[in-house]
Image 1 (cartoon, rainbow, N blue to C red):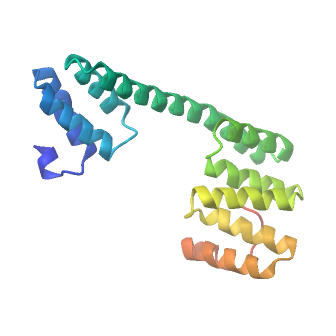
Image 2 (cartoon, rainbow, N blue to C red):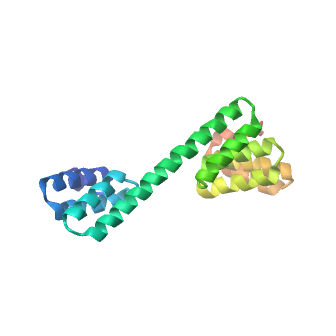
Length: 193
């Protein structure tokens, strides 16, 4: 089977578990579905089928735990959708040059999903354009903490630190930005929210 050929393929383990459950081979289905959730902890389908399998095995407490994890993942997906809507509104406002509306939308996205790195980066860029340098720096650093490979966050942090007068910090941040994305080399033309 695909699960044996590629033992780290979560989808293969899920599909095998699903088929085994349908055939009534519940113990083997449980093994495959648990493996799928270990390999892909965000697989709502795997948690659903694991819960169904455990229920059929009469293990109600374990089934409830699987369904609770499923519900948690579904709520997170809903929160992301709401946050992403606000984020997109922020991008639209930014494209129109409406910095205050963009700031509000990015802030709303972060209220819903505080670990939304891109919203931190874009909010930082807007705040920097509005002259709120310290707040901008905080959001760029939050974005970097959440997503250390975000070249834009490092680049914009360099601009903010330069505005603040921290030349050494600005050079370090710019160096890291260019390491991550060599296209950012050269004189900084403007903030990239």
